[in-house]
Amino acid sequence: MFEIGDYVLNATNGICKISEIVELDMSGDKQLKSYFLLRPIEEENDRVYIPVDNADKRIRKVITKGEAQAVLDRVPEIEALVVDKEKERETRYKEAVRSCEPDNVVSLIKCLHIRSEQRAQAGKKATAVDERYGKMAEHNLNAELSFVLKKDKQEIKELINKML
Image (cartoon, rainbow, N blue to C red; front, side, top):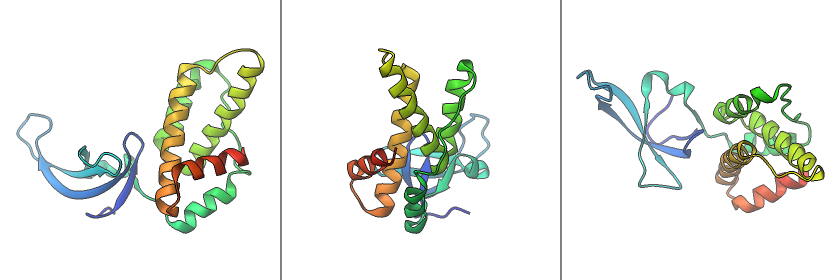
């Protein structure tokens, strides 16, 4: 599914390039296991190791240019994430970010945009949870779209904000 040289998205590290497959003993039980060695494009000196046997749960290939444009075209139609119970808020945010699916991330960004406006009208600031997941969601979405469409991240951010 993944090959050396592929660009992939990881929720924690953003866009990475698979640089090699290595055999490591990460558990200390002297059993070697295969890992993809990822190099984040924004932090090329960093190294991220993803087990080959469950990589599809932790990374996905970067979307194509056509898929990126389709995401931008769908932004106005994507429904905002709805969180019914306050206790579920962080879990739902985390699920959206970790999914690495652009529509889920846009849904979260829309939810946070609406929530920010409501809180501002009530004279309240954004919560730390809202800010943390908002930054992660925006960073990953903007990074992927700017990488694929070869545009500046700020330009992508402004374009999406206009559509919100």
